Image: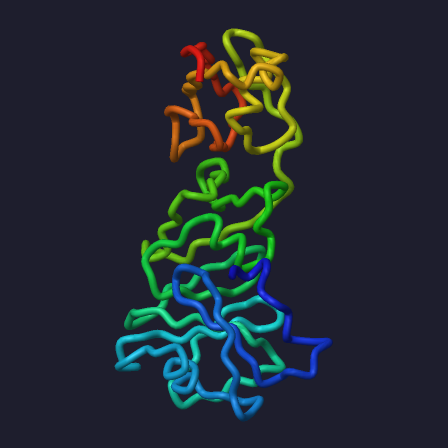
Amino acid sequence: MSIADAPELISGNQNLTAAQIADESFNFRIFSFDDRKVTGGQIAEAYGAHPITEFVVLHQLANLELEELRPTELADLKRGNRFFVIRGDGTHRFFVDGLSMVWPLKTLKGRYIKQLIAKDNADTELLLEREDQPDKVIDDDEDVRLAGDGVEKLKTRPAKASVTIIVEGTPHSWTKNKISYDEVVTLEVPNYAQHPEITYSVKYTNGPNNRPEGVLAKGETVRVKDGMIFSVSETGQS
């Protein structure tokens, strides 16, 4: 269960003694406590983190900011009922859309950063702000290094409305930031859906930074980039 689909217990619900706790995988589980105020130690114990000295507890506030919660420090579940318990001995600070965040690991994937600010959707792009270069678009599966010099600053924006992709030499305007195997094949073979017995090989080049080239298998999707090139070739009968 991710932040996006976890039950909202912060407001509008009388159950103010329940907490959602996850590790770095962002799979949340729900735990109940006897009181609305809990310590970092209680959160770690409920999650099974032993010894607590080897773990960092993070509390996500109602405004989505992340802060470290010490073992004896109290957190009011009314101010935010989401927590992370992650093995580590310190945190790295960063900002997303002006929100202050901390994280105990050296890197964090783009999709997880978007989840932290409740913008984990295909309509939102994540960018790493850079002073002497253009801001860098961070793909969902791309790691952002948090442990370098300085404090990383990221921001979001609506995904680019339209890009041009090339399929077998023909340019096509594409308005989504991902494309599936079926969608690529259909651009080249418009009646593809009427002939499911025919199989195709789909390859691409000039792709996103984390996957500049590769093979797109049936059932898969890939993030698109302006000028991305696809080849579609028939491989036979299924």
